[in-house]
Image 1: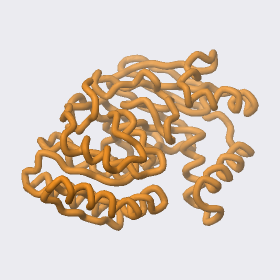
Image 2: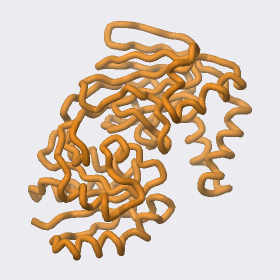
Image 3: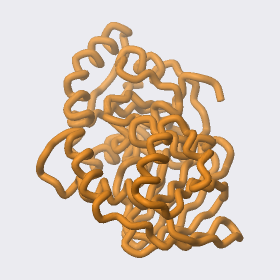
Length: 296
């Protein structure tokens, strides 16, 4: 059967497009019967992945970042077709979770073709604007509003835009009054951010939910309480190591069903905009097959 690779050429600020010759050279060298489908948006990703699924493929590869992966997940929920990831994005956190080599297209193709197929959990998020699944982390609060601001900016470009958005948001952001349900438990209070993890990381390696595993049927919650900006700036950088959960300002929990609500807040999942709060999130055990490089 023809091996399908769905490519987002704009991922990683064009890194995916620049990596296409390496991809095709490697597949040709391995004698693989393959087809490359280049996309111009998430609708194309969904359409091409669904086509491979309907053709009975046992695995389909996507080449891009977490946004491309997010789109590819949607038609594969409950399917016998496994998702293989060839990471060429800016964050690639879902690839990290499954041990996919970063920055090495040849090594990632090796995993895509011969890696172990595993059943993994998904998160399902519903709100007024959306009803979809995510593989990694859903975030609300400061970091999501930074994304909102960055997406509205025309200048600067690249990482400089994100830094500029952070600095601008810090001048105006205030902790939001959250209300949450974690299964049968209600919690509430001011928060700088609240993240729900099916996987552990987002933003290019930030271990925001360091204990999250996409195999346990549970979603991890990380809650950074309302703190002054100077305290936030002191605590937040430790998210790269996961040590932020040791801070007295951070609380964590686990649940199968989570409801989040706070005025003026928006949810992002796998780096993609979901919609305004309130949102309801549920763990969906074993909903997706993923090609991984290491055993569970």
